[in-house]
Image (tube, rainbow, N blue to C red):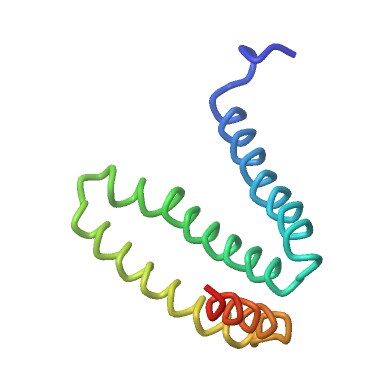
Length: 119
């Protein structure tokens, strides 16, 4: 199948799928190498990516076509500011609830403080 036979929508979908695969696969490889299966950090990352993805698609599919392209830019910026605040508050509240401080995070902080005292 030639690339020229793809229509614009299929190319957009393919690009989104490839980027999301990159976002999900690369950090898994990096976290497993650097943090020796520290799943808490990995879960926090994936949680943040999912929340940011939802925010991105709300902007991309609904707010930009509805408000920005229809010359209602002030409404767009007001709604976007409210959504950014709401997503931030939601993320901070649920992040603290779902991912409490673990022993691995505390061990990491202790090692950093020991290194800081030596320097």
